[in-house]
Image (tube, rainbow, N blue to C red; front, side, top):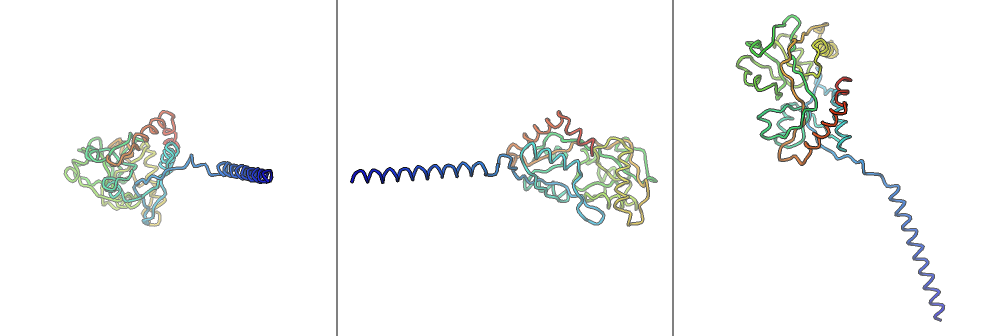
Length: 275
């Protein structure tokens, strides 16, 4: 009788052992086949200024900007969730809602509420005029009595801001190049400010006239070389990330490390040269 019970117990033990072996095999197989989340990207909302064409349609992000943002996504294992807004609204949202913003200039006033990264790249702020409306420019005094088109919410240096609507007047606009160029053509302003990483004046003129040809041909006003770029830039402006000081959980420090690496490796220079 005892022998029979021992045999039953031994059989039960073997069945349990076999079950555990199968179970462990299933677990190991499941872990092997499970998706690798080590490269999962953390979503990060990013405020960005919208850029629209003459029909009010959102234009694609410039290729160079896409490459810069793609670099940071790869370096930090994040995924930017782009939130396009008129620039002035984007800056206000960065101050009050606390999302990260890109494309912003550092000012003494903004630094009271925002923590800025190091510059990712520099924009040169050029004065664009009609080809029949050029004028000498070397200092702000040369803008006396003129009307200058600017992007609402953008910064062009403390001296420029202090002289707005005093030494000269400004025409506030949304960040849409075609409508602004059309205003310039129709003499609603004497010059408009145009940011570019390009340092060669002739290349900037080509950029401007390409915009005219591609977006204003249906208006009947497009002609070759409608515009001139004055040879002295108004400002060399560092383009940065920023986030509200009390919302910075270390993201600016991480971005700064990636910026330093991108500059030292030559990656950033290559992006700018290939634009």
